[in-house]
Image (cartoon, rainbow, N blue to C red):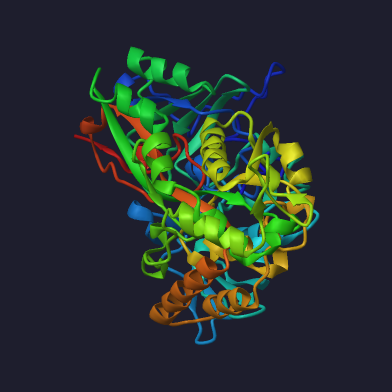
Length: 535
């Protein structure tokens, strides 16, 4: 669940950084799009913090970089820079990847196995400072067998490696220093279908199609992105025709879809919202109390009211996006009476002020949410309303990201998860395993409740090393039944991400995709815009 966004690189030999913000101009291999029919104008939800693929994976960087593995239609993993999906040995400790021939970077240099080695060495290097380093701790060594073959040797069997190979690969010569100070943050050098033409910080970004991309010549030649944080302003720009589409909340998207030629597009996702329950608070140290809080939460009311029906109730960090690994019977009914009975049995009695208490401790706590995030605010308010009739006093606090990570060990928090839903291990391991239970401000979003259960650890570890897909899915389904009996948090719902778009009928190749936690116009109907063809 990534919430910490933040070599002499020459972009096509013609990158110029302007002094007023980071503006870049491109010529040569990036072809200008004077034809409006080949230009896509979109309103993005906010400014990008970086274009470094080791800091900002998938999303907008997938237009600039390719991974060995790509996310395809409906979230199915498929070969990217690899000619076929990675091949594992019988022990799942050695994986071989064969690379495409004739691929070049945007600076004209040739792609080969050494670029792959450099990227995966860098993402694991503490000096580089990628927040994803822990996701690759199973990788012991990456070796270039020949210019078009790479072998990944692992410290232990790991069935979920293909999902981790979606990492964008930059030119090895462009790597250097840490991710924050690297020129790649603003001067991308990738193999992807587009190049950065201009970046006006705080205002807009323009991408242009790259000639010579290994996947073919994109027919959408120019993508212009306006950064518009205010949702009402994004909706207005779409309605006025100033932009062709935007990501909008379900309620606003539904209001404007169907008029002015606008279509509502909803993509399923592994993106979930949940409430952490820090076990440092005395009431949440008791599993029975955590079950009671889950039973007292009206998930369907939140889906109907907050998401206008565009969501699915979940009881754990696993969502229907995990396919056969999802256990649909692992649910919490909304049962306030059963919740109250559990609290009574646990000794939390309702006091004169209507708030429960035990041994002089009131059942009262603070629930944080990001102040600028209206969805999390609405979830926090609905949860607090659900808890009040149970005699639980929840104080709400809108915070910035820095305060959230410093206080998460003693305050509950409205979480967003599902950064990599294309494998169940990537979806849940860091959320649930006791290896991440010790509070660390630098990794506060991994297991934020401080949860530890030996059965959960056992099942997580067994599933990540299981080579048989059916047996692996069965382990994850068993795990979810354990999580309902001993919940680490209050998982609320998995979202559908909603967008409004104009002109999709003019193109063939528009597909749906299973989205991660991240959303915005790099996803939605535009996730594979490089493959569209004009009707």
